[in-house]
Amino acid sequence: MRKFLLSITMLMTAAWAMAAYYVAGNGTSGNPWCDGKSWKIDGSAMTEQNGVWTVTFQEVPVGSDYQFKVTDGKNTWIGVQKYNRECSNIYARGTDNIKFGITETQDITISYDGSQICVNGTIGNEAPDPSQYAKVAVPSEYEGVMLQAFYWDSYKNTNKYGRTKWIDLMEDSVAIRDNFDLVWFPPSAKGGGVGYSHQQLSNQNGDWGQRSSLEKLIAALHNGDTKVLADIVINHRANKSNWCDFYEDTFGEGYGSYQLTQKHICKGDECFTTSSSTCYGAADEERGNPDTGTNFDGARDLDHTNPFVQEWAKAYTRWMLDVMKYDGFRYDMTLGFHGQYLSMYNLNSEPFFSVSECWESLDIIQSHLEDASFNTLAFDFPMKFKLNEWKGTSYSKLVKPGMRSLGLSRFAVTFIDNHDTFNRDSYGNNEFLGTNTDLNAKWKTIIEANAYLLMMPGVPCVFYPHWVTFRDEINALIAIRKLVGIHSESEVLDETAAANSYSATIVGHNGTAILRMGSARSKEVPEGFKAAMHGSTFDIYATNATPVAYTRTENVPTKIMENGTLYILRDGVRYTIDGRMVNK
Image (tube, rainbow, N blue to C red):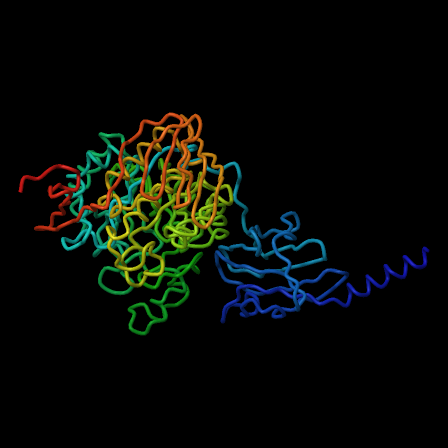
């Protein structure tokens, strides 16, 4: 028997020794990572010594999203379940693929001994410090509701759903602060148009209006205890007069002045490789370090590994809170720089609230939050795209969509549409109802989607065109949410999820709500509950309900624009967008 077992062991050892292993990952041409091969199952061969298989990729450049698995070259893929932090100096994570980022160029060695995968660099990287997790900018069990108070080009007079310059929002400030706890403003710095390619952060005069009007609007919202979020664009910077020169930012006493130069532009930016650029072909010492995230080719990508850039970003974010009186931030394009820097800036300035635009899949959003030490929330794009798939049908799509499926509701800002996904031809596939859809033609679906949004955990962000068009319904839904005390971490029990119906129970601080949706939903009032709101395609019940007594009929209001002012016509009566009757 011993001889038999010995023979089996020797055969297994021999088979192991003859095995071949490879690393397959997201390689790209010109990058030594994975030999430049993208997910080729037998692309990067490992060599065996004493039962350990290894491969080294030399001079891997800075990057925030390296991914890989170990394979047998045929059909076996070995991922994050075998990654071992104890034998690695490269901190990695992931839900399937092994993912990591590095902020310094270095050699990366992958090893596998049959039981564990180790990832080591010549320099290594730092794991996020759990003691710093969610220290700032992420209120727990938060009951607040957010309004995105703009949409693309809504600073113009010709927009269908009303102009939203500072002076326009001031006229509507009472209605806004009566219903919303957070208001997200567009980028308010000097820069043409919407403001995402800003030129000078210390200059708060832009196409949305003058600084004085902005300051009055913020003060008016604060009078109703509504907090205001600034749109922070620090991944990239627009130039002054040529490719590589910038306006100086002068924030004033206690904050300093900052003059960015081409040395603060990421090494791989297109300004250094485009022949028409004024800094084309600049020497390495005249450039910044490699980008720590995704390149943005519409402006100059800034090098956040540079201490001067870090001090500039810290001064700017503090100044926005202290001087401009914002309460928090919406960070633009956070895939463009490593999450550790976002955490650095928030820990320094201590905003009340922060949310990242990480337009990606669930696993990448989760990785971004961990990189940022959970000192920010993130927009729940995966839930938004589930709502796109649903669109009033396929109710099974509503079971634990997006970040809720990973237990990350506290860190989720949920939404239906935003300025990028709505009524912009190049983003049509990402729009909830398709490009250039008239909202009134789809009122049932829009109101039902907002009912789901406002009864679920996370921090719901209502889109301005939805609110201005269906103000009564959305205000009623917000009132029910606040009455029950539904919050960002509310427990949800998904009860029914079929093709034509959905039902869930949601627990709030003050009571419990039941949401029923779809044509096949039960109409019976649950025991211990009262009717809170009846819609055409949904019903809401609550233990502590005060019925809103609102049911929309087919008499849908219409809108007209006159001299840059939006009016609502309902039942033959003309109203302003904040509900005031107009005698005309």
